[in-house]
Image (cartoon, rainbow, N blue to C red; front, side, top):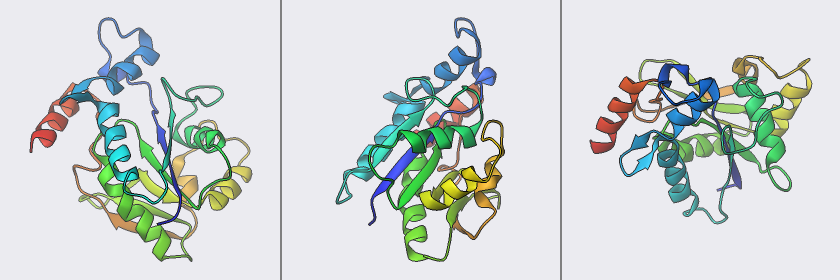
Length: 201
């Protein structure tokens, strides 16, 4: 298993989760990520899953959170590509061979990470690996990348702020099946209730 880093981006405003006391869009996003889920929170469940996976590696995986409570893109609110760029820049030391990109509101995404990493490692001709859900749709916030390729993509853009994440997938991309549970994201209270049912099941 190569050295792996994980960048978790907390994108969007979280306004669909907003309510009294959330303090605007920033507060709404924080409220979404800290919403209770089982004995933890939405973000906490993801980070706990990543920690459990990392403990099985020969060297622990580094995890960088981009969003409330973590590093921030400059200016904030630039979208997931800008968040990924900020997360890469925040990684300590030389970049690892593989960097995984996840969404902070996907509490069960950690179980897909070993398959994404293994698929990228097994295909040296591939630039990136992206998860594909049961509906056949790509899940760009469930993906694994080679940092050198990502850097070339970012350097080729006039700016990363508000640029679409699909810029990362214009090269040679492999697909890996992910489950509905793994790609479930929490955008509103109904999604949180479904996550709680998934956790119980």
